[in-house]
Amino acid sequence: MPFKRVVTCFAVSLQSWSIVIERTFSLGGLAHRSMDMLPLVKNTIPPLTSKKHKGQDGRVGVIGGCQEYTGAPYFAAISALKIGADLSHVFCTKDAATVIKSYSPELIVHPVLDSPNAVQEIEKWLPRLHSLVVGPGLGREDKLLNNAKVVIEKSKARGIPIVIDADGLWLVSKDPSVIQGYQRGILTPNFMEFSRLYEAMHHQPLDSTDLRVTAQQLSIALGNVTLVLKGEEDIITDGNQVLTCSQEGSGRRCGGQGDLLSGSLGVFSHWAVSSSLNATEGMNPTLVAAYGAASLTRQCNNQAFHKYGRATTTSDMIQEICVAFKKLFET
Image 1 (tube, helix red, strand yellow):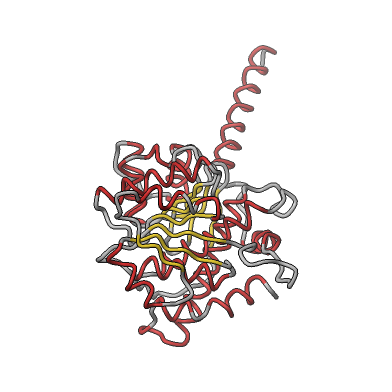
Image 2: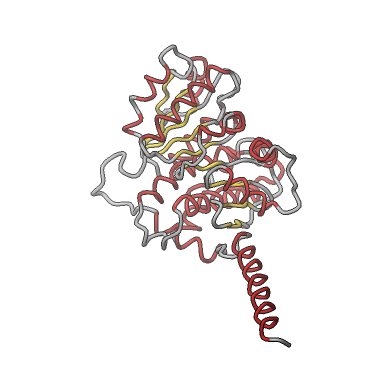
């Protein structure tokens, strides 16, 4: 074979291998398994000590709660508190405030989301918050969505980790620029919400053949925002890496489980973002936080299901947070 042809064949072979290698990495070839990820999550969890002051381990804000939906913001806020946040705020409409207050005296409830100066009322609290959860029980009224949008913009300017779920994802599907490119943003869609987001960004129907690929594509289209695609196994990606959380859960899919996830992610994201690069071994802290929150939610689901079976509710899952947290992160 002529020398020139040999060189050409070799070059083509190298090119083919590079494509294979690139695709392997793009499909999550660097993905960590649970045995690798849980220690990283543990590294970000602040120790309990009497030397700290109230609020140091997390002040979380939840934007959501309207007349029709009061359970979702409560689930998110109380989950954040039980996981280890010191203070949990809910910014809701006036109609929802009394109801949410009646669920628990532990939460700080602000009935301002539908007020004429809602953004100003919420903005003054932002310097005191470590993270924000937007969407649980928000509803789709234009006024509330617009207020949430402006609050997100104000929070981005402060570098606050922002978790977006439920109707917050509806807002993103209508206006992706609200979170696009924000490296401390985390979206937590279920399959239907994911499909809507994908079609909004790619202008074509979702091909669900390989959700790892499409999740990665969506993250990249959104400027490498971290995604947690909830499902039989949770797919977590920032467009660069793809993780799969297969922690055992159950077949029970009652309403509110996603609120437990978003609320816990509000806490984990603060802890991870505040940690050193050594703690996360250089990995994107929002990926570490997302894996921790997904694992905990699934563990709570599993434990509650073993007790209550078909009758399991999210309230039962929240009661399992203490034991589940110890099992995953403190043993």
